[in-house]
Amino acid sequence: MSCVLSRLALLLCLEDSRMSRFGNGRFVAVGLFSVLRGRCRGLVIAVAGFFAAATWLLAANGVQAGEENRGKAPSDTAATASTAAFAAASTADLADSLDAFRDPKDGWLMCSDVALDPKNPKTFTYEKGRGILLSLGQGRDLMTKQNYRDCRVELEFVISKGSNAGVKLNGCYEIQILDSFGKTKLTGSDCGGIYPRAEFKPRYRTIDDGVPPRVNACREPGQWQSLVIVFRAPRFDAAGKKTANARFELVKLNGQVVQENQEVAYPTGHAWHNAEKPEGPVLFQGDHGPVAIKNLRIVPLTE
Picture: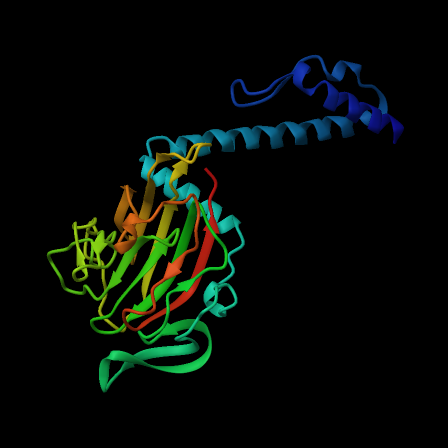
């Protein structure tokens, strides 16, 4: 056994200096086995073969992965990296309870099922339980306890006929949720749009068009819809001066890209006068109209 261990140690120490690592797709031993004698030679040769084959496979796989990524659009690469980070992170469903959200939470209910009211499609019927967050339109905005910088948000939502809601990153950059089903002329006020800036006085009004979604991917009221948001927070230097705008790297509504690499120079809505910050909560509007949310996951992203 001591013979085996000593020969194995020698093999590992000499691997880099005695072997060609990646020439013609295989390893070539150079005078290694001339030092081996006796009954342990066969075992060491077998071990050497195993390490050589395993290392070659790892190297080959690395080259193959590089070839597969070559030629991909930057947006594809960013989305893939973001998806990988999302899958690797803790993905607790935040819609399973109200514990992840700040007080007050007035107007939000925990439900196990929701559906359009057949007598009034502008509201929902529901069963109390877990797994679905529901606002019937008179609730407050729901804000996460945790602040986020760069993050990926995934959720499913359903709205009633004519309803209006939204998801605000950093608490102030809004992706609109709206009953836009069937519309052909789109603005930033439509589902999947980046909401316009607005003023309250002398009456509430938008002062620009926001950024409309690329396509109308909105489903009929009462149908569950999926939303994916990859958000990059604004950057600031040590003195607090903004060096880069906030950016929606990717927004998908029901699997279709509706925003991509879209910078946002100001907060949206009437908050556009407010000072921007490097981090903030994720906010879900609950005071504009009935909306339900499930399968909600938020994962911080690295640079």
